Image 1 (tube, rainbow, N blue to C red):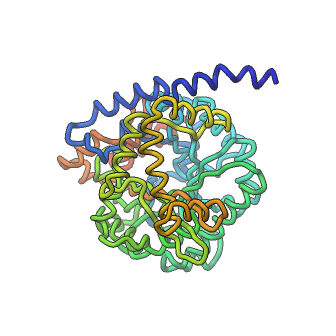
Image 2 (tube, rainbow, N blue to C red):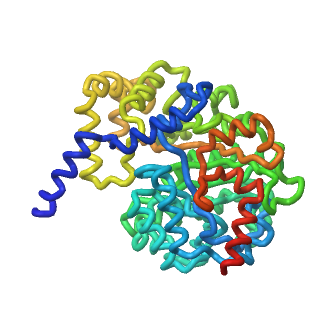
Image 3 (tube, rainbow, N blue to C red):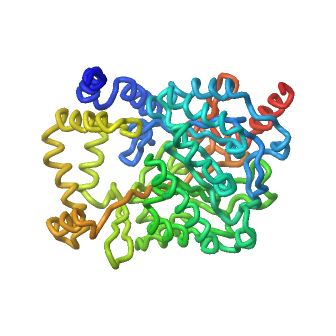
Length: 456
């Protein structure tokens, strides 16, 4: 009882300010830093979030030998950074990313570090108010049963990203080494989905899982197959990041390039059964930073008994209701995050939203909710609500993202410099925040590894 009473002042502060002062300051600063041409309704940087940060040197070594790889040729000979050095990188990123900021624990295959060190790094990031996402090829979880659960229970891991595609070399299992198409790998994706579900079930803890896919000219046509598979498995994977290959690092010569933004999203649209291809997906999408760098479509998959899943975008610019509600919400509550909240904190923050803007919530947001129940009920909001309550229909989130990294030639072009000035994916190196494209394409990673090897 005493503990609950001690939390009342904190819950009151959350309800009084559902979006903290720090979040607002950082959003405003990032929005002001954008070129006027980038301050458009589709722009989410400085409106919804503050980009993403990544560690470097966490484990340069990798036990895969993928055809496309942004590490350099000597990465497997480089010692991992110390735990204290990675913690210092996190501290440097904290004021850039803000509270509940997105941190990628990455560089090589981090799960090759001693598990106690991974746990320590996860806990430290959380202590700073960051949300670490562990980036991995996932095979360590297959080879070492219980590892994922250990990271969840002892490390507090709540976000993981598992990379799966046909460019990878080194996967355990002959059938995966022989896979020619992305569809051939869908049973492997299913294995990971079961692993995620089992870990959630056995621990009773939440785990938000994403998957990443390197896209080349060879596997571009497999994008639609992967998207179709995802729409059936959104209870396990709620986000996919497509990453067209760039000719950097130890990527095979001539393997990079050849997949542009529109071609990629044409195939995403095909997988979602969305007519209109990339043009229609752009109407549903938003940007983070430069539109040629990061595109995103936030959506919900509607599942109903005996029916194929149907994808709906959260913000479709062709829908006046979507635009009014989503943009109106971000204008009032941009930067809000529930991801680090306890159950009572989520309630307090939700109450704060209603109290801060009751007219908007009870008019626009309720109209928005009615639109979704109508979709569940084939046009009838009452039937839809009844189906959702009885479990005859359900809605699960699915976010589709494309990240387009640049090679050296692209970076040196006028557009490349414009993209660089609007980068939202930063790495802390030698007291500077550098774009991941600079790190990958301009020899920054190689120089960093040289210094790391000499220090070791």
